[in-house]
Amino acid sequence: MVGRLLVLAVVALSMPAWASAPATTPPASPAAPASPQAAPVTRARDLPFNRENVLKVVSTHADEIQGCYESAMARRGATAKDAPSGRVLMSWVITPDGLAAEVKVAKSAIGDSLVTDCMVQAIRFWEFPKPATRQPIEFPFDLKPTNGAKTPKKKEAR
Image 1 (cartoon, one colour):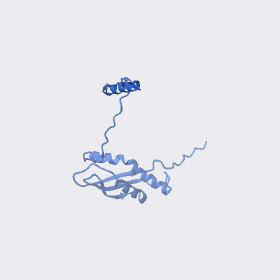
Image 2 (cartoon, helix red, strand yellow; image 1 turned 180 degrees about the vertical axis):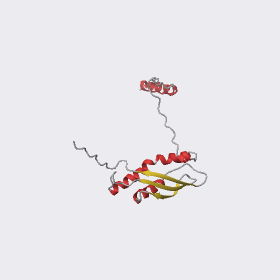
Image 3 (cartoon, helix red, strand yellow; image 1 turned 90 degrees about the horizontal axis):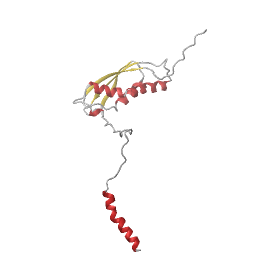
Image 4 (cartoon, rainbow, N blue to C red; image 1 turned 90 degrees about the vertical axis):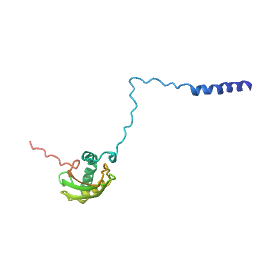
């Protein structure tokens, strides 16, 4: 029994030495890549309000707008050959909070409410740089089929 207590006492007395000993880590190999640092995400609201930054926001959502068009054409059963294409001029106000308000269709060559209603709903959720005062925006979107059903080319008779 005394032998066991002596072993426990030696182990207990040496524990602080273990805790204060410097941790040894293997040296980094020269071929090992550095750990990737997460790049800070810049929100649109944190950017300075200027034309270029507003255009950046709109361009980041271009696929969303095209998705409105493609989805509506698919629901209508339109093919790439018969789907309407053209310009839709959207209008909205960027508030001092960087939000889109008063979103509406100013003019549409498409004339399809499924497309334009979807566009209005999408733009309402976009975040923009914060202007000092409310800023009216008009922006044209040129819509045309990109992934609709293609009509096969006719083979020439030989």
